Image (cartoon, rainbow, N blue to C red; front, side, top):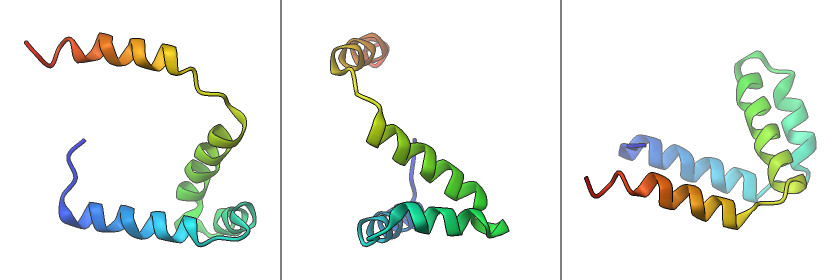
Length: 74
């Protein structure tokens, strides 16, 4: 994924906003009720749920990375 300076700045602001939330779940729920932010809120909720409740299989992740990185050298 290629990011220009505007996208990097936006991601930094989003990261700061998320880090500063004391009640992230409540903030995301409020965002879901606003038409302009509802799609973003749904994606943030999915990411948050995954990070909180799913375990990451680092072995599988490492194997997939090796598989995909073989194409970098060609």
